[in-house]
Image 1: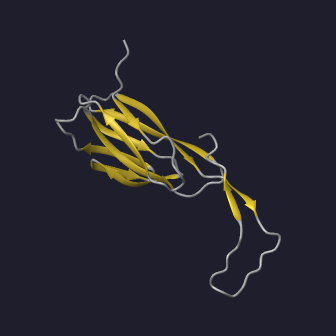
Image 2: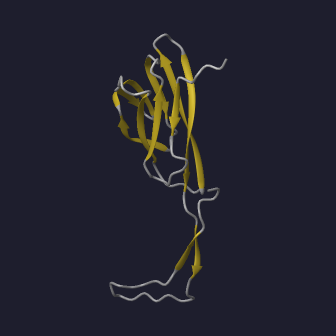
Image 3: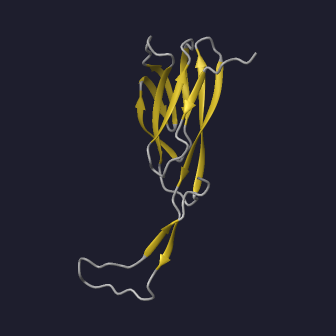
Length: 153
């Protein structure tokens, strides 16, 4: 018989560079944890926390030690709002987020979530052979760009 997972995660299927990404961690009601350690890749940063009462942070590791728990909810949860720090050269980047649940009885459970970040590919569609720049405030440069999409989306 398979044991039911102690936690599950929800994360948007994709995001743009520097866009806020909310990672939700849902816990079963019977989970009595001492801490949940979330390790972000170096290219990501923590922007905000949701439903987190106590935590510690060192570099890109967040240790959540207390969350708000409600007797009325089927599952408990907390969220972390993260974002990529800088734009990148690749059209797509998939980064692993490591999550370790440490129960008060000493049991440990590892989980992984993935943030998939895409940037649009723009191509020049039309450009004039010559461009003249004038010393006026409203100079229009007639370049037409074409949006190519997000790669595998």
